[in-house]
Length: 151
Image (cartoon, rainbow, N blue to C red):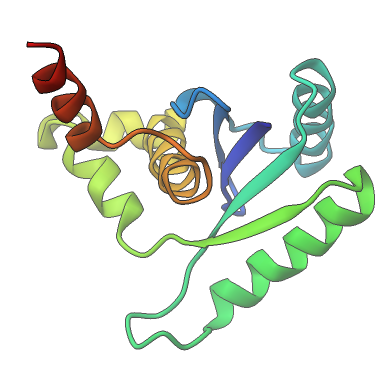
């Protein structure tokens, strides 16, 4: 599996990459003002990294309902599926942007927001959650038990 994590936004698209090793790493966000250039850059990444799965953050409301933004993401997911023919996995992304932003000092948040760094950090959180849920990775407890067995 070679998965591309996406935190979709109308102005910026945060990206991350992960594979069967189970570690999501941020990629530079797509921040071009021209949506066609963002789409072409996304296609290049899918091809270059030989992506097999796309993991897309799905912005549900806090009450689990689907709002306007969730509908936008579902429309984007259909476009991705049509263009790339890859499995699209929608992952609940509630509070990921907040979590990503909280890792940046308050004084720098305004400057960092336009760079897409927060968006790519959110994409990384989304993808890491997906990888942990869907790959058979040893848990930290498993490592501890193995270490105790060796002593």
